[in-house]
Image (cartoon, rainbow, N blue to C red; front, side, top):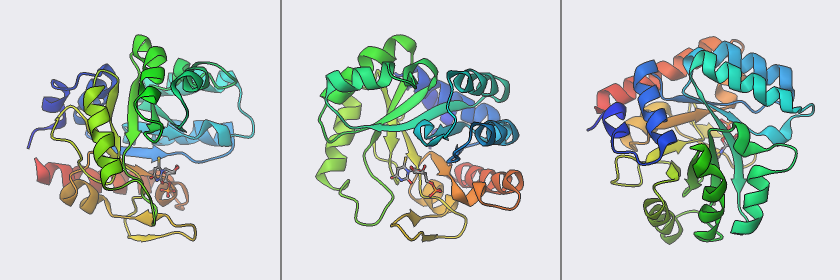
Length: 254
Ligand code: S5P
């Protein structure tokens, strides 16, 4: 199997290229889902765990004290520790509406998020809309082709059509939120949420798979971990454990 950096050469989207290179350079395929509600907690996580991760995933709209300055500080930390910021916005509207949602409003997501994501339920118009804003800024988009919870409707023909939409828009789409490798195109990246060192779930349908299974057997590329790390007594130590598990599974694969 190709290494991440070999695949970087085949990625068409510049942010996909950057992520694949960065993972091999930094030797990490760990993304952190930093689901905290205060700006200071978010910045602290980004600064402490930044050296361990390739992606910092945010839900910017759960912060109680958001200010535009926060996005400047996050950008500085991303440069300091070499990670990419992924705003998990899950856009889901018609092309024209997502143009404004991505570019305008309080959050101005396209100004600071290297990566964002979108549902494919509206059809390709959502990609075309987001691309108008994001491509000139060299941003990348992940399509939600599969989801982690029990009972998800994102499966079968829906997933298949999402993969085709990505392949048709590989200039802007860098990959998928998915549980496994979905495309034979080596430039497209699979990013998998719902990951924990011990499998199981939560009370609201979340379903957890282990890093070994996700990277080793299902051949995904990036593990996204939230509570498994953030709720640990020592998040840094726990992040190192996830990083090691994810990297070992990758090394065994290539
Ligand atoms: O299918 C999905 C897609 C996403 S982006 N399932 C998910 O859980 N996510 C996100 O990953 C979710 O919004 C949350 O931020 C993170 C999982 O967090 P954890 O605490 O369960 O690891």
